[in-house]
Image (tube, rainbow, N blue to C red; front, side):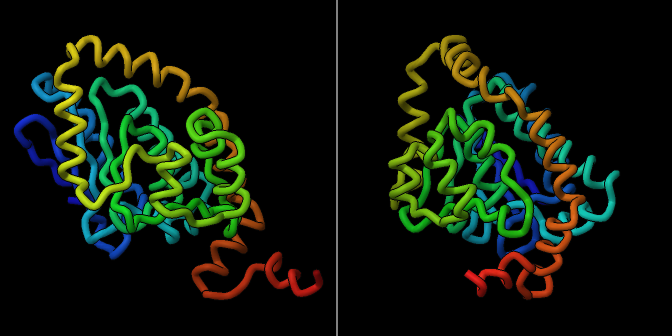
Length: 255
């Protein structure tokens, strides 16, 4: 099991452990999480879901080995990115308040997961980055939803420069709700405040806030599926696995 579900007093805790130091997005993780969220939708008693990565990291994004397979197998690429798209859409549309707890790193697809959460509480030492462009894989959710949530210039910085930012910076640009050394306490405080809201009011607010976030996702994931099968993506992914430099980095010496 990559996804563990625990029932707490007033929320459901979902923890990720994909068997690696850095939790990764692969087909098994995505399908398990989709199935778990479908089960949770039926749980009318609980209004809040808390998401947390085990092993001290929220997640490092897409599994590079499955990206490698996607770069040479069109059918697998289509399936892989459809699961990813469906996961983001499920979190946008689910009638529960979602809260992510981030420790360690949140990179790539794991960072993009934060964009579809209602609230994000991170440790002050957490780091955030979207470096996919360095291996020829652009960040689809950051490009489509990011401008709406964190602004165009911040999307450019994260996506086109591939820079890593701190929790303090992430809070400043609105990627996360709060950077703190007391994640559980801050999460409990959030849930406490929202508990004063009528359940129907809270869900309607979420629905209307989130209704713009699923725009263009289908189209951008089609583009990503095509890109991953291209020469540059195959080269970038293989260079990463072989710990070598892709041709566009080698050419930097000429600048």
